[in-house]
Amino acid sequence: METGHGGEERIGFFTRVWQQRVKAPLSQFKSNVAQLPKKVKKIAQDDPRRVIHSLKVGLALTLVSLFYYFRPLYNGFGVSTMWAVLTVVVVFEYTVGATLGKGLNRTFATSLAGALAVGAHHLASLTGEKGEPILLGASVFLLAAAATFARFFPGIKARYDYGVVIFILTFSLVAVSGYRVDEIIELAHQRLSTIIIGGFTCVLIAIFVCPVWAGEDLQNLIAQNIEKLSCFLEGFGSEYFKEEEGETGDVSKEDKTCLQSYKSVLNTKASEEALANFARWEPSHGRFLFHHPWNLYLKIGSLARQCAYSIESLNAFVGSGTKAPKEFQQKIKAACTKMSSETGKALLELSSSMRTMTQPTSATEHVAKAKTAAANLKNSLKTDLLEIDLLEIVPAVNVASLLMEIVAQTEEIKEAIDELARVAKFKNPTFVTDRTPSLSRAAIKPLSDNMDGPHVVIDISGSTTSDSPENAKVSHEITRIRNVDA
Image 1 (cartoon, rainbow, N blue to C red):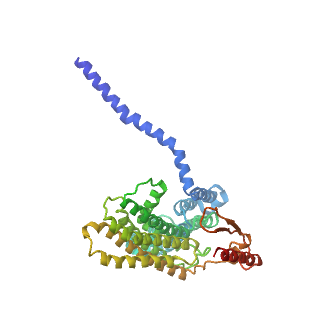
Image 2 (cartoon, helix red, strand yellow):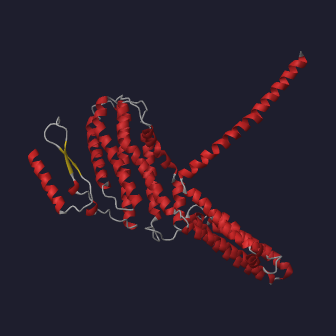
Image 3 (tube, one colour):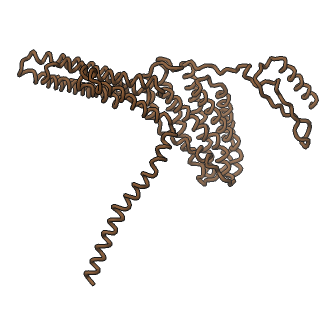
């Protein structure tokens, strides 16, 4: 019995080990392999530029590899040809700005470090065989320590950190290897030449083959963030007061996603700063000229995040279950809904203005309406708070207060975008007459007979100018119909 019992325990132990350590990982591996094609498809569909970028990197590596495959090219550079391949691997980035920044950093750092290393080697050789290694070691120590300390400066850290690292690496390699190599100048020349070839190849392909501009990505990111804030605010008023009044109804999946999309805005600071840094390296393209005000984009992004934090506090009251008296809800409902709706419309207009690089037109009007609603609500609360138990209405008052704060933040975002539009010379929105729907093709259709009084529907389409003879004729017909209606 004891032997049988011990055997059963051993069988049970091996069974558990098989299931937990072997069978379960194998099942997970098979599941991951089966899902891999779906993941690849999703990544490619989310941003097809990723596929193009992968092909561009492969093309760049293939081109610089030719220097190693062809004997005449290999004889000119020797083993240093591999530095061109290494340069492509570490320099080629997703955006043009990142690639150009890394390429220039690597080229200038290599040139400066190579020149200093050759000079240090020459000075060290004058001290004799015993003094040469001491002087070379001292130069490596001093320059490496100074360059490393320079990396702590914010300006250098933001734009030239990679270049400083390459400077330390190149100076150390050339200075140390030059101690055992007689042709140190030839060594430095070969490495610099191959690095320039690799960097130049990356920059050319990045700019001329389906370029991905960091500046455009930054502009689209901030515009998208503002649009997400607009999406929440336009739907908040009806959603909040529907819950407070006890109304029920199925909320669509799109509405829920829209009300929660603002959360991604809270974590975009690092992405915005990185894109702005890369955008400063990019050459003039399209309407993004040299000295484009990228710092204003960061300012707008910061204001958008402040608004998102206020929305985060506001969202806490959706579905919280805390209800104020219905009478008080009715008093603030119109004003709060108006503030939420108008700020949402203003932000949507501002987002569209940034995307199209045009002057915002109706945002000022929407902000003015929201400020008027906020002022009216503030005046109303001054009298009503004296007649109501404050403890019962605290949540609703907080909602109203947060909405007033969001109105002020929306106005700040509008002013920042106005400044950006002025400095970056956004174009004025064009109201071209030949694009105005033509009245010459207006179809005047009577509505159903069961409506009170005579009504008409004017279906307008076409593309002729508004001052054409046909338009004048139709305008006369519309005036006649209105006179009959009166």
